[in-house]
Image (spheres, rainbow, N blue to C red):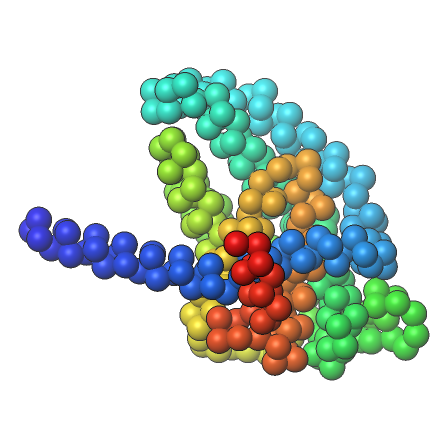
Length: 280
């Protein structure tokens, strides 16, 4: 029995190591950063966000304040037994993560769903992949990339489901393990967030479930790399609305690279890998 446990543990460790190597090689973690730069340099992409900014920021402040007032001290007390002197920091990170998740759930469900779709489609239009977008919405002539967007034919982003909440709650106890637990939590969240960032792309491509899973498995390292970077950026509740949009921009830029065939076997553009090597 002990030998079997060791064998399973070794297989799991090898799988995680392989995934980590794939994620690092893909350099997909640079797409969220590229999304920030692209978003800031293209003012037309600001309109979907600014149209929802006031209510979303108010929501973020309210959720974060509520979570710190009512949940920080109880969680810090529990973490005092598991994290010792790091309890205050670990509890704060946990509350931030919880606040960010709640804000994301509520805002994407009630406030910014259509705005994120507009942002994703607008980037694709600006990247000269209008033919892909035209399958999911009407395209107008003239104007900037956002002004060209007409009525939606397909609405991709599903409302929040109980399954996602259950999965999140199941992962939460990992945060009670000092440092390592939080890292594992972010990685697990990243594995889910990566493919989710391309849900609009899958719909525009009209892929069925089998095609989506095949694509995700082929680029699993890249999706994990992208997802982890995106989750870390959205961990800050007050700024998470901004990063939700920039991550969407990054995901759209990646989709445009895929459509143009400007990707390596790892699933990302060669120039991103070159940037990653320079940074090393």
